[in-house]
Amino acid sequence: MARKAREEKVSVANFVGLRVSPDLLAFLDARRRPGEARGAVARECLGRYQVLLAHGLREIQGLGLTEDEVMKVMEALNGVLYTPQTAHLVWADLADRLGDEHSLTQKIRSLSPAGRFALVDVAERFWKGDREALREIIRE
Image (cartoon, rainbow, N blue to C red):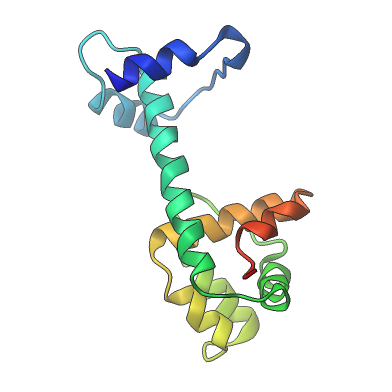
């Protein structure tokens, strides 16, 4: 029932089409109900990912990072490219640049995978020009 309500709110103006790998297609098909469109399944999966990132952001906020600490993390991650398979290793890139024993490396390493993916998401948005993304993780 909730899925149907969400589908009614989607308009043609919000259409997003994409091509996917055979693995991702199999992933979507494994979650489809009989007669259900793959797009509806993809939308639901993206919604779950969005919620997961929100949980990760709250976890990062719980670290109590200052603006200077967040900027140090962003500088360390500048130019690093992540795939879905490597995003959870963000702490290792910090360790390479700041050292294994650095307090920021230790804080980021303590994050769950959701927190690590959220950090990668913030860093990618920051380096694409969204400077406001940092406000989501800086201690107020």
